[in-house]
Image 1 (cartoon, helix red, strand yellow):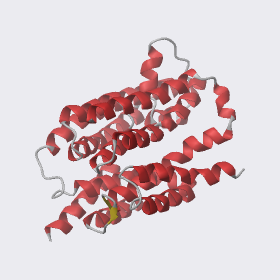
Image 2: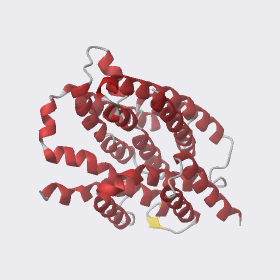
Image 3: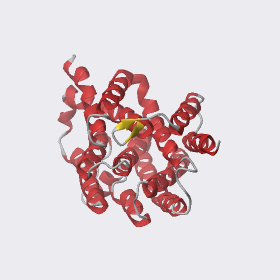
Image 4: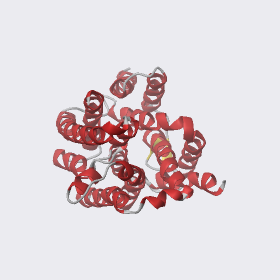
Length: 99
Length: 206
């Protein structure tokens, strides 16, 4: 199951990359397409933050992951490097669970 | 070139967090490495393992990952204007068309666009795959919840979202609200796809 997901994702992601190199540049004249490609990641990433932090199956929960998110946001606001953000967030959840 | 090397190192470190996240989601070390080798676009890779790890279907995981990868197609169209590539090199160029290589290529002086793209793309490719292996192998040795890895993945998504917020915050807020509403109503993974609808108002409004 995981293998089929890996291969399908690889095919789809490479398909987009290769299509971009193959199509004529005039597709850029369509503002809707351009907008969709730039805005869609923001919507999907915001949803991934929500599901990764608050979802437990089909229910919404509050646990140590929320503290991680807060610490991560603080680090991002302080413009710390990505690795620091991730490590601090992991450390925060670990610390809350160890209490 | 120096800029692309230092970026390569930073991004590679983030590859280690992907390797760890993949193992936590139930991928084997080999599967985690295969994702980095074949998919090679960070946000999509994280989305795939996040959805499958939460018990989502293959269809939901693949769909969210591929939709996230759609922006690379736009990058390719922008890059082909400035970097003429022919034959088999085009396959390589396509695979290394990602956020980082595009950012460096499009912000380099025109004479350096070429160098910026290839150096950044290839450096990130090598380091990303090596660090995925290291991250995946070390995560197999620890208890992911005890070291807070699940929380770290949420923060990683926020880190990817962060630079987009200035321009796209209304869409991000819309996506977050839709996802919150969809979690109790739909199977894991589907809320992410529902959130994609948040771009519609911006597309309709001219």
